[in-house]
Length: 122
Image (cartoon, rainbow, N blue to C red; front, side):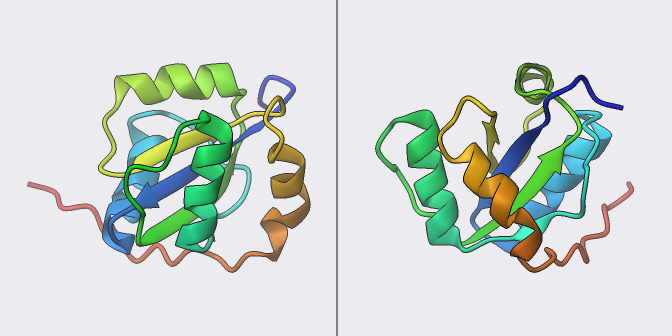
């Protein structure tokens, strides 16, 4: 039961392991609830989403990317994200961003992101 409007997290990383760790960190340390299973998206698309949402030129391309719908509004998600430091770049997309409706329409079409990562317990 989120607060009205949901948001998306776009996770961009050097590799799938870093994206997996970031997804784990969002859930466990950021206490964010995922509405659906994370989806695998093309790295180039994730890079384009970053440029569109952040409004800044791309500094580095990613090699792996995921998209997940959050049961948190964008403001809450961003404030939680600031408290954790995932090993991948996370971009929060809210309804005020032009690409939000496109993500709402297409998110179910993407394949599931393989979450084979098992956190190391020391």
